[in-house]
Length: 310
Ligand code: PSU
Ligand code: MN
Figure 1: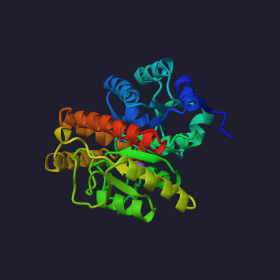
Figure 2: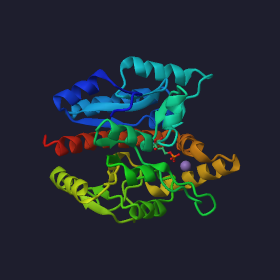
Figure 3: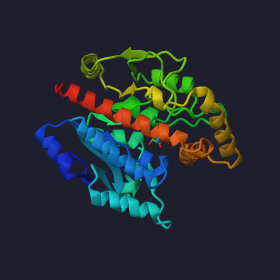
């Protein structure tokens, strides 16, 4: 039974009835990851990219206590109004927060974990994001591990990402994904991409064609009793990347600032992304846009492929 608080947009409903492949998009990257008004331009661009690649986009967000799967222009205007109205702060809605956000009539962006959950409830199989959350550096003193890992371990949705965010402890994040039996597949690479940079020294399994992915996908669903999610690690295009040597000192700088201001919990990731954007004079935001678009294209290819529409 579909929960009553889920609203499908007309375009998404029509995609279901015509069997058009659908790609879900998250909205925390819009509400908390990118500056206004670039965030809404980016959302339109990502949705266009998904249409251009033969699928229908389903941007997922919570508006006035309803979980929306696919946003109408009016829904986007509502989000925009709330975002620019200083009195109402948009919420960052994770899987944990979802029930309360709906019960209290809140409006906000859904993180990777909440988006996976809602996509799965609506029977959407593929979802594109920028980079997943994971194990934060300094986990030895504060065990800040994103719920995205938990969602990936439990919900059988394909998440197309540029790896995990570079601000994280990458080897620890990869270990957590392994412990949780989450397949991590590099798209045409056997090195885990690190968001702003296309490569790293961490080896992962690699796939290079839609057919190979589709065979893997159906095996995964068939052979696992409760199949986990799947993380596709799609490197940022080389021309748009920021080499690790350039971005790493800025990341350390941003983490220091967060510590000195005592920023923790769900505020940490948005704070670090905003800090990096200032430290790199917008270069980190440009890289973020390029990888989001690249992920939307691959997600559309994979969504078509698992639907037998090559
Ligand atoms: N990727 C981006 N920008 C973002 C995020 C991911 O390029 O803003 C968001 C995602 O919604 C992800 C969330 O689920 O950050 C993780 O937050 P946390 O580390 O608090 O779990
Ligand atoms: Mn956290």
